[in-house]
Image (cartoon, rainbow, N blue to C red; front, side, top):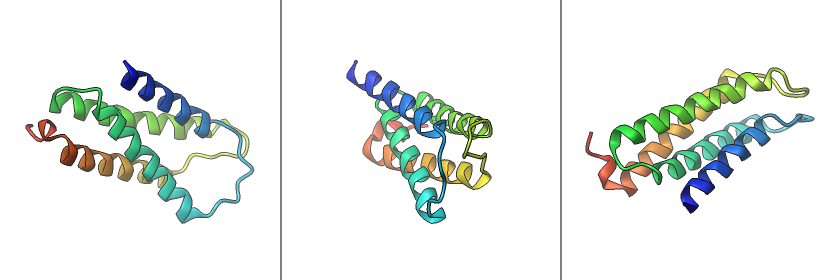
Length: 111
């Protein structure tokens, strides 16, 4: 139950961070590394909720899709904008999270 609550809280955190107005001015490389790290952690949390490789891949794809929705939502938030580079960084983070999850949980290797 705690894993589900943690995943739900992280989902809420993603929306809150993504859809809060921002004054801008961050460093681009730092921003992209934060995107990748955030979504890698998100996938690691999601991997704790599944029991089959198929479920794992579906959760990982859903997390990436969610990141895309957050990028679209930013278009409507003052001081924020959609960014293909942010989406790319999110995707790299999802991929990294998948690799780390597969290394940590051998049952996810069976495809």
